[in-house]
Length: 508
Image (cartoon, rainbow, N blue to C red; front, side, top):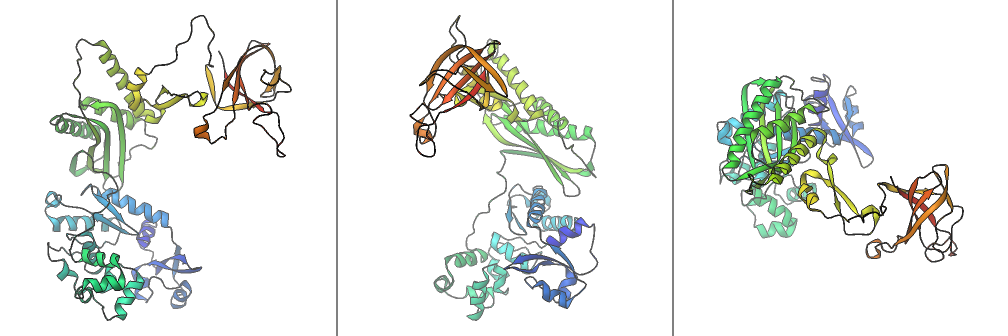
């Protein structure tokens, strides 16, 4: 695949023999090579110096493992059109669980042929096989690409293959050859206990899976959505009108499927499969379960209009999929006589639309927390998921005709101030300097002592004395002394040191 990726980058064959090298044990060795280099006798793992001696005109490229992984991930996204259960088989393989999907493409043979031809048109050399176990399918891919093995025929299908086709460690493969076991059939003919005692339980399990005796489940890249609907096109679509119409029809089908089970969608994803293999996906979330297709249309319209990178159809989309990855059971509510229910619905719909345009993490509500620490007393949470909790939250009630105890504006991080002198041990400052400006203190309220949560902070946080201060110009500050005099702040020699002062907020 590294060679195919580079050839795609240069829009075609490279002409001369080409290899990709990677550093291994402080030496450059061949990591991948094309057919022309292979015909010259070069092989993977060969030192670059030896390869250059055999072919001076060799084209050499550095390996890019990150780009290779990205390419494999893109191919896996494209393979979602065949089945939602796609797993990575590093470094250059994929597993597709096509159980119950093959008939949609005309059978297993037709599906295999369609997949191989499509990826070959995109510039990739493909080896593929179908078997009842993932290990057997991978072994067939390495030795007999295009094979389709029926259930129960795994052992006979791979019997003649060399033991290296299993993909075990090189030390195990070498040990098997030295023991005279050169093919998988010869290894399978021996007693399993002998193989386990000599080469370990992991290799025995690998061999059993290759022979069709059980199988380890694959780990799909993405969780299986609760509901999926899709539309395939004989002729690709590229206009915004057709895309919107397709999404609208898919939304109606999706809603109808969920309605039968009394569910609504909380997270929706639309995937657009381009003819050149590129897949674009956009996602929207809702605060309440959605049960109307018009709401889905509006949310996706907002999301598409707000995309920084527009949805480029290229040569067109040949498939559009709409899936609900998160659903909830609908709870019936009395909606005719309760005006608050309608108000809540309108607010939730507004939040969903704003979140679809600017992102759900940017629309927040504030929830009170059970703590005296000022910066932790309020939690900013996504409004879509915590709207009900925010509406039921109870905040401290301000006493009438009394000034506020907390500032209107609280800084994310307290800003240091310079205090030349203050009344000790727990008095306020007489003046301070903040942001290069001096402020003379004329009125003071406090102190309000707040001890840190020692059971969470491991004693690293100091006790704070907060003061509400007004300067000569009428500006009001919320400042605190971080630490107690001669009790919590010490210098490098262990002697008491003056604590630091900070401004934490501003009153209106």
